[in-house]
Amino acid sequence: MHEGAMGVASSAVAAARRSKWAAMAASTWIQCASGGSYCFGVYSPMLKSSQGYDQSTLDSVAFFKDVGANIGVLSGLLISSRAGHGRTWVVHLVGAAQCFVGYLLMWLSVTGCVPRPAPALMCLYMLLAAHAQTFFNTANVVTAVENFPDSRGTVIGIMKGFLGLSGAILIQIYQTMFDGNPSSFILLLALLPTFLTLLLMPYVKVHHRNGGSEKKFLDAFSLIAVTVAGYLMLVIIGECVLRIGSVAHILMFAALMMMLISPAAVVIKAQMIEAKALGESSCHERTRLMEDNLEGAPEERTYDRVAADRTCAQHDPTASNKLACGSGHEPSNGDLILLQRGENFSITQAMSTCDFWLLFSAMACGMGSGLATVNNISQIGGSLGYTSLETSTLVSLWSIWNFLGRFGSGYISDYFLRRKGWARPLFISLTLAVMSVGHAVIATGLPGSLYVGSVLVGICYGSQWSLMPSITSELFGLQHFGTIFNTIAIASPFGSYILSVRVVGYIYDMESSTSSSDIHDCIGSHCFMLSFLIMASVSLFGTVVALILFGRTRRFYEQVIYTKLQSHVQ
Image 1 (cartoon, rainbow, N blue to C red):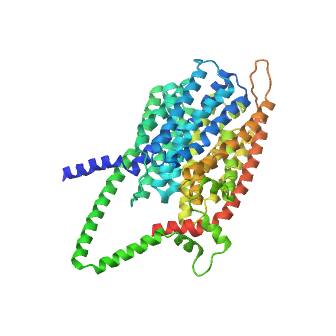
Image 2: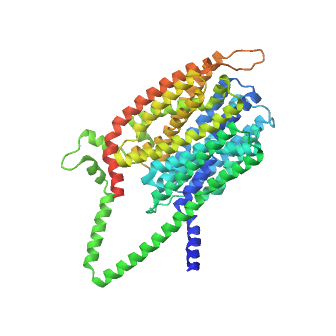
Image 3: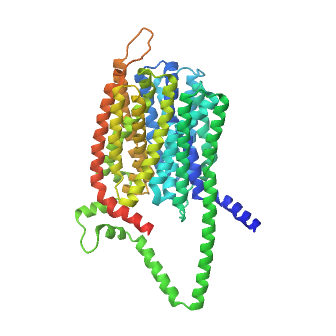
């Protein structure tokens, strides 16, 4: 008996390596190391001082970081092509090469190992390094959605959530091993994501077999993510309040690593239960076939006919249309438009719809203003009199708020979509409205306003990154999902360029006091007040745009997506 249990466990471990749960765990681990772009606030002061940049030049480098980290059209085209379809390792490999080369060249420049590059060349290094993130993210998100199509909001929230946490995780590694040496942090960003991806990319594959316990184990992944986020928040706040020694740092880091490894246990447990269920199912199937052979063929023919009818109904392209429109009447023009949503659009077909551009515009307002905030958070803190430790804490906590938005919005929108049929664009409008309040709070410059405002903006900014891919997959289908959602993500650097470079950077340099020492600093709340009032207005405009998209898609979500989810539950 004991040997049999051991055999089942060992076979489950071996099978787990080839399961969608192994793909889920490997993807989350890659995501945990992929968010180097979220740590820009840690090494941007050194980049500014070592290269002699003013604020506008630094914001230009940050803009190319945003371009690289958010324009993932190439990764989307690659994963949809023959070379990348079913071979996510190709997408991961291209990302790993870009990550290593980009950050390595930046590290060589900052440390003086090579002559100081022109700002345009530094922008190219930053673009290349950050662009790797889109390849990692596209491969992981697309694989997760294809493996768990009925829980796409949850799995996207998990993937995006771990990516949001990666900034805080990387900073914890930096503080434990290289504290006080930002140049070493840049080298860490070159090495860790590259080699971790090369190690794990063979496990990230699509497995179309569905299991009966998906929600249970996805909830386990969610619980791990929330636990890691809560632990990181306590560690970050503790480091700000208490004086923590090197031994305590090492122990806290070891505890963090144990939490990050824990998805392996979920993978093994899930595979054991699914293997057991599959064995019982096979046994019941063999018993049924033997009984059918003994009792005769008529019932078998009846059973086969019913099964065939069900299969045809599932694959009938008009079935969902009839379900959406109701029966007994001809579809109106409005119904025809409604029925087109959810089909597999190409990128050109998607771009010819109003829904695409409404979603793009809302993302430009939300993601653009959020990026402008995080890119300048160190300078905002400096102008308001925060210490370097406090600004570093703000950057680390931003990753936590970012995670809460990414994970929470995916989970909550899934819940209300399944229970009430609420359209996801409604949640975009709500988060943009709250983001507007956050920008207004920062604009006041009151004591503690940067802490409160960054919490609101960070959570709402993260929400956009979970809601946008979910909405894209539901409106435009899964066949070209990677390409379409990465095209919409261009809205992020587009909005960031206008708000960060042309608004925040320009107004800061205009307000800054000039001195003979060529130090471009500005002290006081006036440095960023006008900028954040402008961004608050932009977020309000995005709220209106998202409400328009909600009005256009509400019937589609109620009559098609909600009905489909209910049929799967039944």
